[in-house]
Length: 195
Image (cartoon, one colour):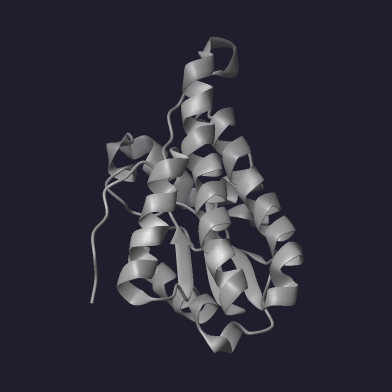
């Protein structure tokens, strides 16, 4: 069973409504995956504040809002698994693109995850984050081939990943197989960030 809810992750009322509608339909929320994200390439000295704010609002504040409202329900239930999606950009400065707003937002997701894991552990609510490397998504396909080749050459496995290669880590974190995992930032990047 599934329902579709239209909304904006940067608007608290939309997030609250989505959680309320989910609770009304299913009576509980066992798993939350926060995966909304945007990026643009702009040097910091040329970046308009609105561009900065839009990325931070979507990539970090949106994660906070969904964690907050779903977390309230999971605390009542005394159980739940939250999986936030960060990026290797939380740990490395991407090259050659200039995207300090994106990297900052993804680093914030890692620290938010760690803070909430600590706060909600007494309620049996686990909070983890997955940090993917370069994935062969429609967004990445917009990049020039020379960049794709460069990013692939940096990874130890010498390739860009297929998004399906992330499914195992999400199933693991959503299940009881990961019952002792909380506050973890799990990098899935084919060895891109080894160097």
